[in-house]
Image (cartoon, rainbow, N blue to C red):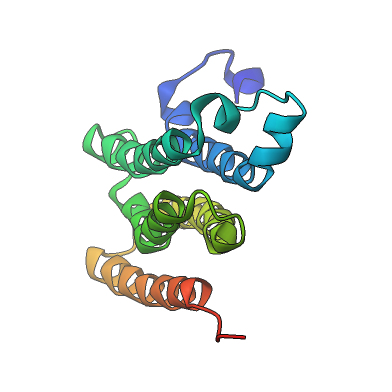
Length: 169
C-alpha cells in the first residue's frame, strides 16, 4: 500500500491489527508446552518470565484485544459494518481462552487451545476479508446477518468438536 500511495494510513493498518494479534496469540500459546524445558535451559520466553498463570492471563488479554479492535474499527467507521461477521469467531476464541486459563499447567490439555487459536486466526482473517467483499458488493444487512448466523453455527460446531473431552482410556 505504501509503495503505491506513499503514505501510511490507519484505514489500512487498523484492519490488519486483529490478524497480527492472532498470529501473536498462536506463537504465544505454543510456548506453554515448552515451559519446563525453556526454564531448565535458561530460555527466557515471555511465558517463562511471566509464569504460566500470568501468561495465561496475558493470552486472554491478547485474544480480547482482537475483538475489541474489530469493534473499534467499525465504531470509528474505519472498517465497514460487514466486517463484524468476523466476530462470529468469538465462541471459538472464548473456548481457547477458557481452556488456557484453566489448563495452563497441563500441556496435553492445552492442545485444544492451540488448535482453536490457529483456527481462530484463520477464520477471523477470512471473515474480515469476507466483510470487505460483502461491503464492496453492497450486500444487504439481512443477507449479511443470515450469512453471519450460518458462519456462527459452523464456528460453534468446530469449537465443540475441538474442545470435547477425549474418551477415557
